[in-house]
Amino acid sequence: MKKLYLTILTFGICLVSQAQVTLTKAANEPVVGDMEMYNHFDTTTVLNNASGTNQSWNFTSLSLDTIISMTTYTTPASTPNGTLYPSATLAGDDGVGGYTYTKSTLTQYELVGMLNTNVAISLSNTAVAAIWPVNYGYTNTDAFAGSINSGTISGTVNGTLTTTGTGTGTLTLPGGTVVNNVLQLKNTQVLSASLMMGLYTFTITSTNYNYYSATQKFPVLSVEYKTTTGAINDYEVTIKVNSNLVTGIEKQSLNHSLVIYPNPVKDHVTVSFTNLKNETPIIQILNLYGQTVKEVNIANNLNVNETISTSELASGVYFVKTTLGKETAIKKLIVQ
Image (cartoon, rainbow, N blue to C red; front, side, top):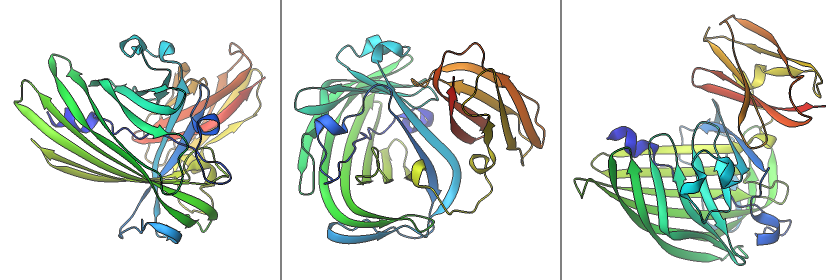
């Protein structure tokens, strides 16, 4: 059952910010075609997530990990099982088989459910993530409930989702980049599940501190603390920094060695990177919806320099996703 517990995704709702760090429906809801990408970081010290005004949040002690995560936003109908969520108006695709389904109304943004290869959650009573506008001092708590299914195992889920505008101040990122006029938004979710008529029960408590700036559509930095209690006990911390702002950090990784050229491209693109661990590389070309339009498996050489035909691709924006074991890197590609 451990795999089932660990594959249940926390419902992190991606909000965005304006110059005044006030989140509104018109400017801040994700739309079809949006993409957010984050570099993951590690820490050996306790992080400062203090609340209140005029804060100075310093994250220069973080060390760069090799993980990069990406979410692309698409229509529910374009996802493999979007029909399971008929009320959803948007789907977030994580590129590795996971989808989060949300609904937009005139005044608020709601979570409908999630789906991956192991588990599906459908909320009959949706979770309200935001009632617009959202800014410092905002607070809202909403109860949700629904069903959970994993193959032949089924049950129920319920819980609460609380969103609070908890702080304002200045944020210093790894590498020394300073971001002014930042809003700290705290998201706390408590999800309880009961499976096989109560034989397996557990609770996941997730607390997210998301930092927003007028300079970026998606969060500048996100820190998640997740605790699982019940049939098993688990604790994990996830730290992510907006890939647009990851600068001045020295570490040899796939993301740093990956080069694609020419870009823009017409007929052929060359993908070049260093394969230090001698692992078997996989190169995928994704469209704006996160769907794989081409995949190439190549030999595990130390220095990879692979030329891929793009002549069959329609003009537009794509992403080159390269995977080496547990490490992934993504670069934007423009096809003319």
